[in-house]
Image (cartoon, each protein chain N blue to C red):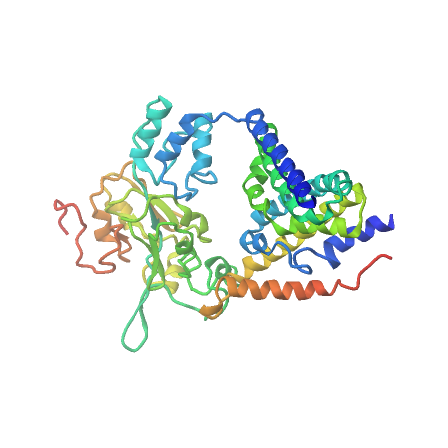
Length: 193
Length: 291
């Protein structure tokens, strides 16, 4: 129980993948102009992270360890993630069109997202079992969602503010992201154990 | 040996995933109607949202399903409606082009001493977000005296994907040549000032003030006071005055321009918004009318 709570708190707050570990900055800057799309992206990332954690755990445990090929884990994981996202995209398009409409445009973006690879590597590093890996993936995705939705709502307001021309757009967004990351540093001491 | 094993395992993994993907693309193949691409090709592709759908693609899909009427695309106009009708194998009624009209004539001009000689009065310096929605929420009905008038911060300008609306002398003005009638500006305007009209209309009521005449006059030199002179002179009975504001019924209006000649505030005008406030201007497009 303690381990589960610890993982959730770490993945969402104290070890937030974006604002503390600085993974997945690309979608964080790119898809955060509107709260709606940010939420869609967050949901898609949560979905893919949980799925990738499960698949990669299986590959790691039943393929890489028995064959003594752990040193190839990064390459293997990228292969697994990229394929799984593609298959999921096709599956959703055919079977669950409603979900595909909500997540579809974001799925190809996530294929090469380093936050997804990051969560899988963390799972391996921490030696989580299957369920804890999936949990860490889902919680990490939720942490991503929290960060990107917070950032999108900040950006929607900041974009209306008057500022020197040289700061308009991305410079101001990057500064806002930096401040948000500083705020999340406040969670760094938080732990259950 | 290690290298060969690594190549074999990862290559095999890649091959398996490749086969799975190939199989999945067959199993989960979704047939798309070829007409969808054709419909998309007819549409302007600007994704303005004027039809009420998320974008051109969403509208094309809705038409294909029979959920949306053909001809809802104001931007594509009649040509687009006919092309879409041909693809769907139905007949479309002719679509008349509409353009946006800003119902405010309160653009300001000043004399050489800086006194306001024309337009709506500014009652307070506004220092907040340069955005109409934000400005309209300020206590006391916003920074200008007329609580119905254009705030002039250009929220409509930002909403327009065609660069057809701009703020001149504190009031938004539509360029009819560029406007496609998607009415994205109307949705953005917090004061609901923007309405669709047929382009080239001789007479439009360019004011939205529903305040009493005296109140309107105090706030603006060109506000409709609801005097009803236009209503009296209109030979077709096309003009009514409700809530201190004249309204033209275009199904009856013959575009003669008589009303424009009697308006004491000179706010009934050619929708091209030239020659504002000049009493010697004759109604355009109609040489029959003598002033």
